[in-house]
Length: 187
Ligand SMILES: Cc1cc2nc3c(=O)[nH]c(=O)nc-3n(C[C@H](O)[C@H](O)[C@H](O)COP(=O)(O)O)c2cc1C
Image 1 (cartoon, rainbow, N blue to C red):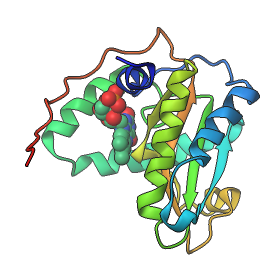
Image 2: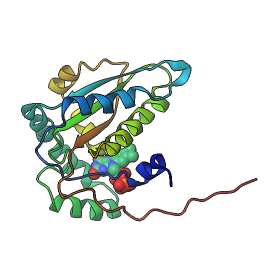
Image 3: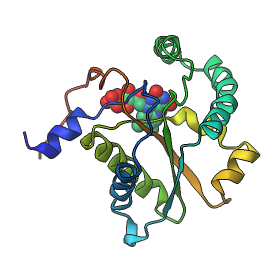
């Protein structure tokens, strides 16, 4: 297996982080990898906000947790079960106390197609540098708070992708969850 494919297969969603910050040069390499994603017409309709400040990260968690609990009340039973396990292991079931939270902020026509590729580049680059990552949909629950919107300078024509957590994995990278064999038809 070549090293690119090996890195793809080794990437894992990390849900426990060391308190240690991600060094700036490493963070910037990861962001640069995100920024190198393809985009429709090379439009590159994205920008990045990285939340590192502890006070701001705590604010995000404080806003998101009650909304997460409310959201979970009407979630499918299998997700509720899965999340019970996750919740039991952490005081922060949204951002997992990650030292860096990357908001990929997209605008323009092809943002819904382009920005997830930016996110995937970020997660793969992070893995190649031994930095853990996780796309956290539940992090979106904090985004319509006026103070958060202001801090991210979110405009009406913009949409947030991720956010993507970054940090050193506490206790190493987790094992892979079960993965289905691909369904392929060659014609
Ligand atoms: C769009 C998207 C949203 C996700 N949201 C969350 C989330 O809110 N919380 C979380 O812990 N993991 C989240 N994940 C991570 C998935 O649970 C994870 O990718 C999946 O369990 C497979 O594990 P792996 O990434 O280690 O292969 C999300 C992943 C994607 C792609």
